[in-house]
Image: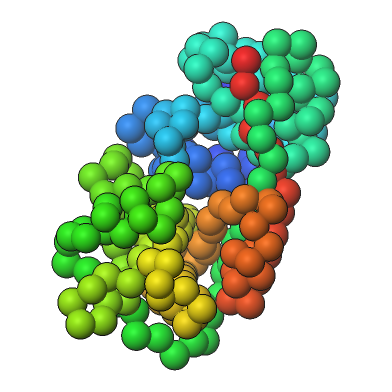
Length: 237
């Protein structure tokens, strides 16, 4: 096992995998990476509400690498990566259990949409909207890694929001997408997501988000904007 010390070296080792580069966060603030054979593992503390080990590569190389990394960082960290790889790790590491499967979606071209969304100067009203519209959201005002909020408001009322959250130098990240129940069906989430996605593509080149694999409405919205779906999974000890 060899530690990777630069984002450029990591990108080469991971074939530019977006999940790996997102997890690395530029290899700052306690984020570390290792390789073994053709596998890569990135330790990402408190990233999108969990301590994660983001894994990429063939399972035969990844399994011993994950064991070694868990020995360094502790058992609170959750392996995360392509669903097939995570299922393979669970098969090979008896202590691991499959925690969840869901979707990772990414895009590298800005959507072409007419929008009225904008960046807000602060997060006033966002928490109240999330409590009503999306109480299980991973992104909340004031949380570590939440950079800024965008949305749509009418007559002073906040109707729909999304956050630039946990973005890395090489890839932007969208979270906290929510629309007030009374305002749904008007395409507001699509406008907000299109705006935030376009802004982050301009800044980072690629953008990603995570979505519940059973949420066909959200997946359909993101596909219409140009996002591509990849099944992913997470495991825990």
